[in-house]
Structures are given as structure tokens and as C-alpha cells.
Image (cartoon, rainbow, N blue to C red; front, side, top):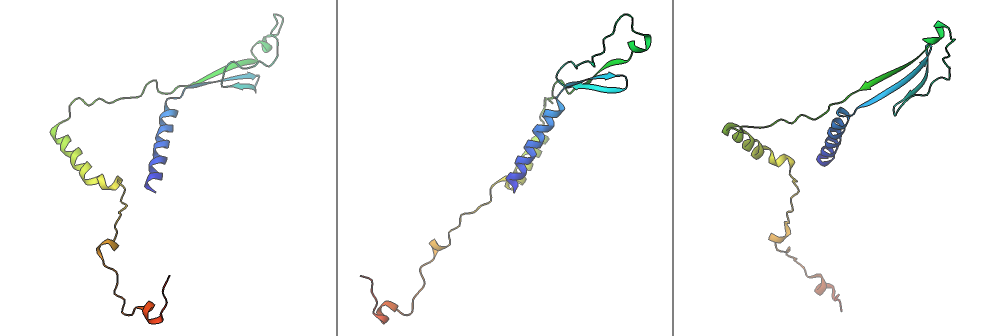
Length: 134
């Protein structure tokens, strides 16, 4: 159970780092009030309306492109430990000594039979019933 929890937590933390550094853009093309195309990979397709020079003033502004950028972290923060005092060393050592058994395998291989002799048999059944293996 403990190994399963460790694996799940490590995968969750790796996805957290991945999604916090992920950046992408969303391109959308609107024709009037209607969404015509959305693209995550590049330019969107237009709606096919040609803007000629003799188009009316109302038709010129009907199509629009929107670009939304979602930016993640550029670089991860690394904290530098410049001075590791004696009190901090004592805390880390005591923490490790106290909690080392929580993360170690507690399976014990105890063989009780090596310290005991076989039980005494009060009646020898082979001799009593005269049955011997040949």
C-alpha cells in the first residue's frame, strides 16, 4: 500500500511540474458573432468572405481573429542553500533517525522451528501396527 501511494504521489507531482511549465496559444476566427474556427496549432481558417474594395463599411469589420496566450513558468525556481547551520544539521539527523522505520520494509523472516527439537512421540505406531516402508 505504501509503495502504491509513493508511485501515485510521484506521478501527481510530475504532472504538476509539467502543467505549470506548459505554454500554448488558442487562435479563434469569428465571422460576425459566430465562431467559425479554433486552432491550437497554428492559424485558423477564414470564413471565406472576400473583402473587396467596394464592400460596405458594415462588412469590413464583421470578421475578426482572436489570439489568446496561456503562458506557463519560464523556469523552475531552485532554492540555494548557502549556509547549513549546526542546528539544522541536528534537526535533519534527528528527523532521519526518528522516521527511518516508516519508509523501510518491515517484513521479518523469523524461523521458529530451528530452535526447537521435534515433539516426543509416546507410541511408535510403525512398531505397534507392524507397518514398515520397504
